[in-house]
Image (cartoon, rainbow, N blue to C red):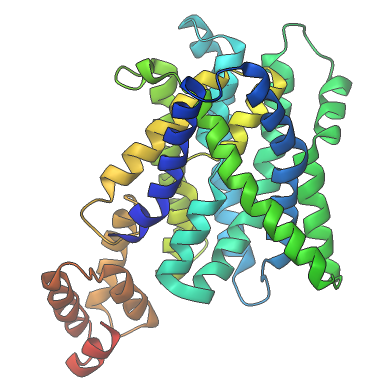
Length: 365
């Protein structure tokens, strides 16, 4: 089973379980409302704090990886906002627009970290941590501001929107986690044990809540709004991030991690935020589920991080005609498919054509 399938399958199954529980054992809305508030105000903030506290930012190109992802998220956010008049003419209301926005810009931390770690070990995890530090605070601020402005039935002032952002628990969690990381504040072992337990539970409960809000009848015939959220997240965001990564001079492992982190499905915390702030939560649940399914289907045949990382590999293939560079080694590791011996032979031939000895190529593969 491929790396991405292994990372996505538990996420998808938890969403399905949430949908089943909503229709069998837990049919009352009040039961799920309590779980949403617990997740939004306690569990997800603790996950963000602990993940940012543990992020290793000392050995990775922060400016390149972080810059590419920040600018890509900013570009997609601006594109969504620029298209709001068009969406409105197509009968997409404010709450639905906020779901498109969140679906296009948010990312699933669990999947990104899992795929990055499985591909490149500690180095991949460090790179993904940089991506997380770059994206999480930015998209949370944008999402809260967009929800406060477009999901509200009454027009809110700039001061009201700013206060909504300032009071958001996820924003505070990002700020606290980054502060502790930057000043290297030592935390006791008991803190890490409790924080890890709460953070881990947030992933499962958040996905169950997402499944509970899912309207299954919309999956077979997704609306224009849902299709837009999926297209922007799985295609537009990665293309922009990869292009910006190349512009920043990234290659090999660094560029593939940028592709991974920009193309993973939307976080389940987006659904909880939509529920709490008046967004179109059922639409967002549909977007998240469709993204999970499409990401899994796209990767069913290869052991590669995300489907658009194939575009990265095509770009890097041009380096094979130049003298050997370290990028060839990183490419071989991504290219390798354990379930398909032919791919290993193809990678070996490719590396040899790049002035890298066959013996070294075999070692890398």
